[in-house]
Image (cartoon, rainbow over all chains, first blue to last red):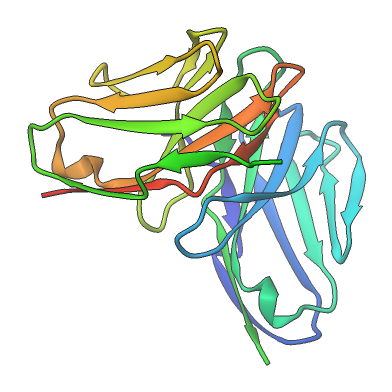
Amino acid sequence: GQQLNQSPQSMFIQEGEDVSMNCTSSSIFNTWLWYKQDPGEGPVLLIALYKAGELTSNGRLTAQFGITRKDSFLNISASIPSDVGIYFCAGSASGGYQKVTFGTGTKLQVIP
Amino acid sequence: DAGVTQSPTHLIKTRGQQVTLRCSPKSGHDTVSWYQQALGQGPQFIFQYYEEEERQRGNFPDRFSGHQFPNYSSELNVNALLLGDSALYLCASSLVSSRETQYFGPGTRLLVL
């Protein structure tokens, strides 16, 4: 099945550092979503974006809906150990009964 | 406010058997979607139910079927299990007004031997 491309695939960072990751699609999306998944659990919704160019924050997390509508970015500021996990982007083409397509994931590890 | 719940948490089956997984949506949600997540991969969309009907389907064979009940809960059925069906099966619920903003349950881990 189709998946969005996320980069980087994995990253090790020092506690306190900022993190950036992105997600690209060959198709235009009208909604971008960012999720975090811990081992053995379901994904948890972090941020939802509904408009091209939109910049939305949730605490230390900031996400942007790319103006081309084919990409999105997630930034985490001042990382802490509990930020460890896998971050997934997800996109949806339009309203109605459109399916949500997930990215390949970015595995984040934070070194205390 | 209860979140999305799924049962069972783990399941072991053998090839050729059939399995039923269950999901209760978040309170107030009316739309349920099912995903399959293989190890190391992102979730893959199976199908979405609203008003007790399948409204959208991903690239999965007919062995995968589902049902939604009047109380919005849902079941995922998989027939003639294959080894490749081993995965984490995730249920997500949403509101009809914002179907893309989905909240996930903890998943059911299925192992097919």
